[in-house]
Image (tube, rainbow, N blue to C red):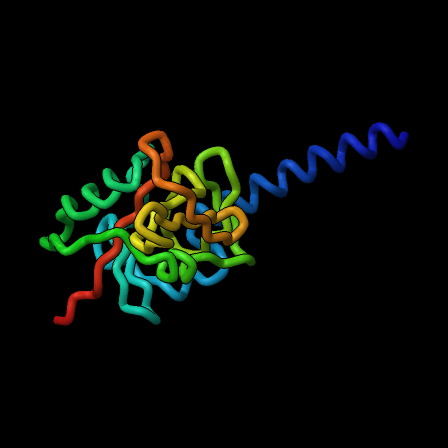
Length: 162
């Protein structure tokens, strides 16, 4: 009997996790009212006025390639996209939210889809280090830059004043 009960709890826990992830994918995660869709692929953070691409770049990039990637983005008639600061990335972190990001679980309340929990920032620690943000645990890390150190890229720009 205890074996069967444990199996049901395990299956139930797995189903609950999938249900929570499905809700997060539908945009019902906590903090969803903090954002509005500007256009397909762009989300505005209402409190800051920052506009974010609605998904990361989908592949690994070293820091220099990440910076070039954002400078090269042109969406919604705008070309002033950039890497976010570490504080801007940290502002997206929501310890109450659950969302899938690749094979990991992230704490991201924004309607932004990530393929990895690790995102580059523009913020330097010093001349040889740049911060990246970990959306699993809400941590800021600043390792030495090396060509083999790669992370994902999420670009941001200031809101358009119409």
